[in-house]
Image (cartoon, rainbow, N blue to C red; front, side, top):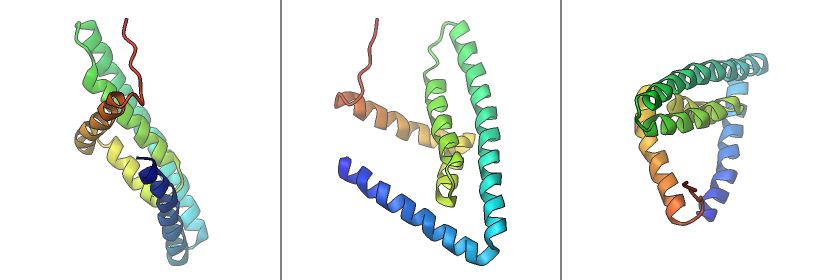
Length: 130
């Protein structure tokens, strides 16, 4: 797992820099800068809207005596997506958008759940219960 993370920390910026250079040559610096700012603003707005809807659904479920497990996973995906959209870069924006859009988030939610369960089973993350 550590080797995979190290590989991603090297590969991810390399992909972003490559796309920046290519896009800068194609559309120019000013348009590239405006595109980065626009995707950041879009990410904030979309994450806020989706986050508020998820919060409302979770609150309704708790008021009805149901555990909001799916909504907590949705919230985690929205947090990841919003963070990725705030980072400058096209690759991170694409992945962040996948985490924020409801129809793609459903599939990614199962991946996030499996990852969290694996981390809990390896005692990387501890869950405290009362």
